[in-house]
Length: 75
Image 1 (cartoon, rainbow, N blue to C red):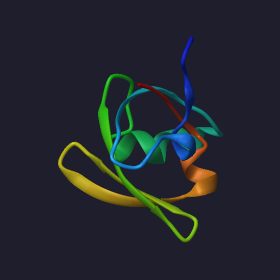
Image 2 (cartoon, rainbow, N blue to C red; image 1 turned 90 degrees about the horizontal axis):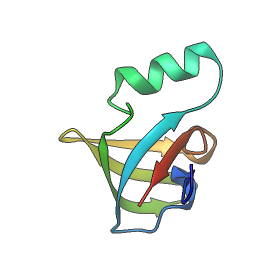
Image 3 (cartoon, one colour; image 1 turned 90 degrees about the vertical axis):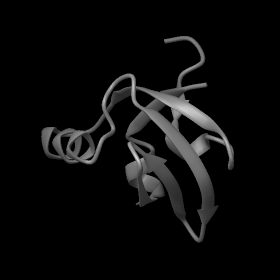
Image 4 (tube, rainbow, N blue to C red; image 1 turned 180 degrees about the horizontal axis):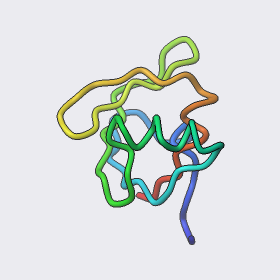
C-alpha cells in the first residue's frame, strides 16, 4: 500500500491508521487482541528507550521496536 510504513517509524505526536499486521499467527493474534486491527487509529505518544508508546482504542501501550515493526500504518 502506498505510504505504508512500520509503526516503529511513525513520528511522535502523530496519528496513524493501521493497515495490516505482520509476523506469525501468534503475533498477529496478539496485536489484534489489543486493538491493532485494520482501520484502527493509533496516536503515537513518544518513543522512549527502544519502546513506542501509543494509544489505541482509548488504551495506552508500550511496544518494543520489534513488535512495532509488525504493525503497518498509513498517515
